[in-house]
Structures are given as C-alpha cells and as structure tokens.
Length: 227
Image 1: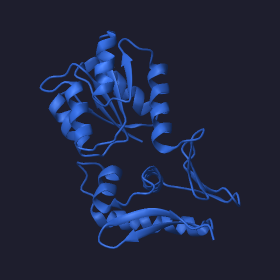
Image 2 (image 1 turned 60 degrees about the horizontal axis):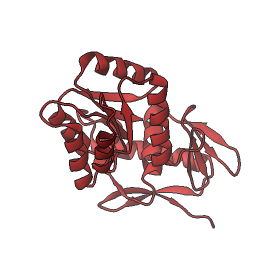
Image 3 (image 1 turned 180 degrees about the vertical axis):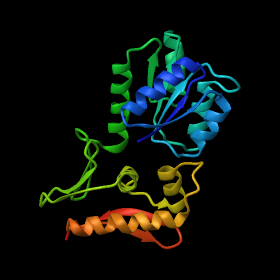
C-alpha cells in the first residue's frame, strides 16, 4: 500500500517514514504544502497523512482542493491543535479522520488500518471480490470456493489490490502505471500489460470465474461472472 506523508517537521517526518516502511507501507514524504497538494492530485496514493500547518499551503486547503477535484484518497489529518472547531474544520474540508499531536504510534497504525478497511473492503487482512480472496499479509491469491491458492509477486499483488479497490470502475493504463510504479518511475505502459498477463494466468490457474477485462482504448476492470 502506498502512502503520501505531508509533514514539514523534519524529525517527525523522518520518524513516521521509517515507522511506516517498517510496517511494509511504501511512503513518499513531502515537507511543502504545495508539493504535497500536487502529489495528492496525481491520485497515485492509497492514503494520505496530512499535517495542518504547512508552508505555502495548509492541510485544510489541500484537503478541500483535492475533494473539489474529485480525489477520493482517504485523508488522515494531523495537527498540534486539539480545538474542536479545528477538528470540525478539517473534517468539513474532506478529511476522513483526525489525529492530534502528540500521538501514540499504535493509534496512528490502527487508524491507517481502519481507513484501509473502509477503502478496500478489507475483512481481517483480506480483500474480497467475486470468488477470490487476496490476503494482504501473505500476498496469496485464493479461490474461496475451491481453496486453491497461489503466491503473487509484489507487482502482481499491487495490480490485484488496485483493481479490487476500484471494482466497478475502469482503470486506465496510465492510472495503473502511476499507482504501481510511481510518478518518478520510467516504467512504460506495456509493463502494465505484462503484469496483467501474469495475473490473468494465476486467476486461470485458480480456475476462478473472476476476470480482468480489457476495455478497448480505455483500460481494465475486474468482473465476476457467476454462471
């Protein structure tokens, strides 16, 4: 899972980045509000941890503008202030949750897990779609009807994670490349097609009725035909 951290306190930012990486999150960290806003607008991230007091653009502005642009990435807002009006302001601007500094890291991680479950329909570390279960801890893909399972590589797992999270929507090759390889990556769009082939083979191996359908000229979407 890929997180965006926007925090201008360098010691705090470094500590959070290290903590989150130890928890197997991929983390991009920005100290400038405008840079954080631009990164969030790319729709590359699964969750954003957003400080309120930032240079050039504060967290309230970033959240409000992101929601106006249609960005649905869950936002966990951090602030040193505990005033109720401040929390209400953050939630009204589009934040999904609020954490006041100083905080206990266990609470931060718990809130991230809660946002992840809300976004991905996670059931005890599992992503569910059709007749398949994607296990987030082991990166195994399992057919829940037969019990057959197969291990996924990092990129295969990320591909399935994104498609399940966006079920009912068509994901373009550009969106998939951005979310899987990142904004600064030189990965080309044919990399997406290669990994689609890999994942389809594993779905076939599992004899799953879940399919990844290519929508000509647009992208890919998950479908389940229970016939």
